[in-house]
Amino acid sequence: MTTLSFKTLDSLDPRGKKILLRADLNVPVRDGAITDLTRIERLAPTIRELADKGGRVIVVSHFDRPKGKPVPEMSLAPISDALAKTLGHSVTFVPDCLGDVAAKAVATMADGDVVVLENTRFYPGEEKNDPDMSKELASLADVYVNDAFSAAHRAHASTEGVAHHLPSFAGRLMEIELGALETALEAPERPVGAIIGGAKVSTKLDLLNNMIEKVDVLAVGGAMANTFLAANGLSVGTSLKEEEMLDTAKAILAKARERGCDLVLPVDVVVAAEFMAGAPTKIVPVTAIPEGWMALDVGPETVALLKSKLASLKTLVWNGPLGVFELPPFDEGTNAVAQEAARLTKEGKLKTVAGGGDTVSALRHAHVLHDMSYVSTAGGAFLEWLEGKILPGIQMLRAIGQEAVPL
Ligand code: 3PG
Ligand code: MG
Image (cartoon, rainbow, N blue to C red; front, side, top):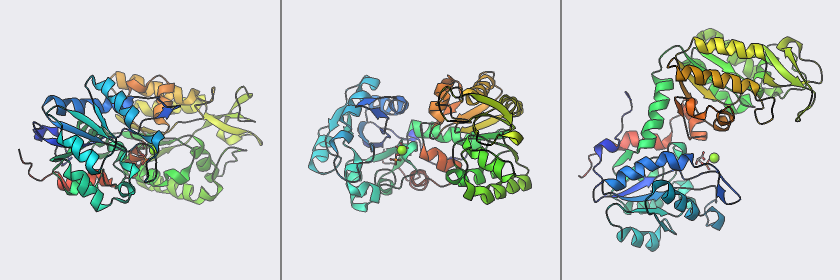
C-alpha cells in the first residue's frame, strides 16, 4: 500500500489494552443458520493477532436492520458462537453494548480475552451517529480498531463517531481490502478495465461516471446494457430497460468517447420470449432482437470479444453479473468470462478485484470465487468506493489514526 495514510496493527502494541474492535458480523442468515462464514473467516486473523498478543478484544458490530430497538431474532449471540468456533478461542457474549452490562463485562476481562457485545443497532444512537453513544462506546476501551470495511460507508457511532475519541487503527481485513482496492483503482497496473453488470443504470450512474474516468476499458453487461443499446437506437424487444435513463446513457457514451475510454457493449445476446427455466432461447445480434423477445444473457460473440479485451488488460475490477446467472442457461456468459478472468489471474497475467452485491454469488456460481486476486466481502461499501465516494469510516481512520498511541 503506497498512499494509504493511516495506522495499522503494525503500530499497535495490544498487550494489556482494551481494544474496541468494529467488525462486520452482518453475515447472511437463513432460517436461523449462517449461510456464509466468509466475513467471520476474514475477520478472524485480526482477532487472533490482537488476543495472542495479550489484547483485550471487545468486538462490536451491527447485525441486520433492527431500527434502533432490540429485536431478539437480530441478536449477535449465535454469531458470537460461530465466531468462537472459527477462532478456536473462547468468546464471551455480552447481551448489551452500552450501560452497566457492557462496562462490567469489560472490567472483568483478562489479557487475551475476547467478548462480543450485542448488536449496536439495538440503540437508535448507532445510526444517528449520536455523540453520546460514541463517547460511551469509547469509554469501554483504550484504542479503537476498525476492521469493518464493508460497513465503512455508514457514518454511525461505532464506525465513525467513536474514532473521534480514541486512537484509531485499521485492522488486518480493512488493510487488505483497502490495499486491494487501491491496487485496482488508485494506482493500477494499466491497462485497467472494469466489468460492470447489473440491472439498472439508475443505481450505477455514479459508478459508471467514475469508472469512465479511471479505467481504459469499461464493459457493461446485465440488463443495464439494454438501456445503452436502446440509447444507441437499437430495438431491444421486451428486454428490461430504463426508458427514463436513455438520455443519461447517451451522455455516458459520449463522455466515454471524449475520455478515450473503450466502452464495450454486447454485440450479441441470448433471448427468450419468457423469463422462465426451460423457455426456448435464440442467439441473435443486438441489431436483430426480435419483437416480443428479451435479452437475458450476453451471446458467444460478446464472450469472445470480452475475452479478447481481458487479454489486453493488466488489472480488472468486476462488479455485477453479465446475465441472469441465477437461471441457467442465462449464466453461461458470466461463467465463461469469469472463468477466463480466473485463468489469466492464475497465470499471473491479470490482477482481478471483485465485489459488491451479487458479484460474490455470481463468481461462486462460476466456481471461480477463490481464483480472483481479491474478492471483497463488502456490498454497498464496495460500490461507494467504485463511485469514488469518501467512506466516512475510512476518512476517520485517515484523520485520527495519526495520533500518538499511549504504549
Ligand atoms: C452490509 O452487509 O453491506 C453491511 O454490513 C452494511 O449493512 P447495511 O446495509 O444494513 O448498513
Ligand atoms: Mg446490506
